[in-house]
Image 1: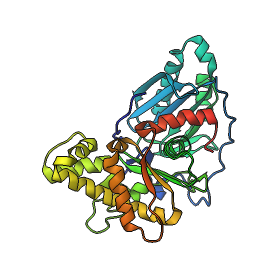
Image 2: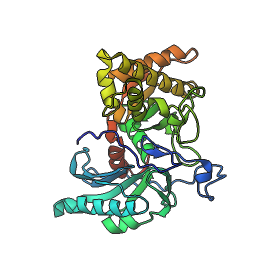
Image 3: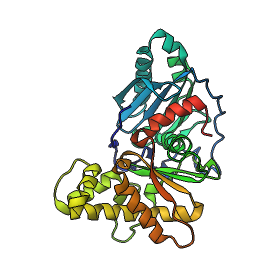
Image 4: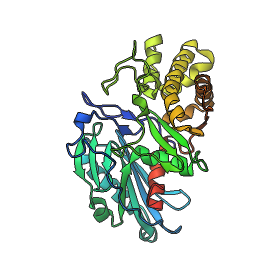
Length: 354
């Protein structure tokens, strides 16, 4: 399966950036029924795991692209495709059409083996009521998902939060497999991730996951963040921020953060930009490490392609900041930028984020 690159989200004035697959939102932006909630809504009932001969349809909805695939038990894609993400509720029509096309590309014998689908969505997702509550980047609010895909595709369809599924996949089936305490950081246009403690995936009161990108680390002299704060991790350590910082420093336009990392060995400006990004990321993660003591930090998303040029300095930066707890190992995710799509397929097959 091809490796996907960093996606650029669709944004509007006042909307937050896509943080590695999720949307951030001011509390006032949330639907009234969700405000003041004292806990996460009851989760949707878990579905039974599927037999090995079953096929599943997985779909990952991003700010600019909707990706889908039909896979077997070994993770091999039998059909796959992608379409641009329309604005607003029209995105759900595009999801439905893509799923229909992927199913139609299968031979009849394969189509009969597709037993379940899973769609992972950005923003705030109410899985118990099957509602896409809010996405600032794509532009929907309180869209009932219900059985629309189940009826359209003819198979039971689960929905979940995209970063929750991506982080769960890396923890349970990727680089974090075998560890009970894991912090997964999805690095792309934004920064977010998941935290697993004592063998359980931690979810917020709104069902979201870790908005690590919106931990302020440069309150004095930092850049403004679309979330409304100043100096958030995301303004320094995201893929988009790294590329912008290099251009500001040198006046040279580049294709993206991957190019900055590639220039590091012979370019002092690139080295300085990467060092600043790593410092900001370490400053943001050090509180999480003190609070939860993860054994492992797994880096996923588009920036994970930087490899040891990112993992090694981040480990050193964390070790330099920690006094009371050991520095966790920092490793690359197994699924990289396709963690959302791989996770959707695994979620469809397993039936729950367990």
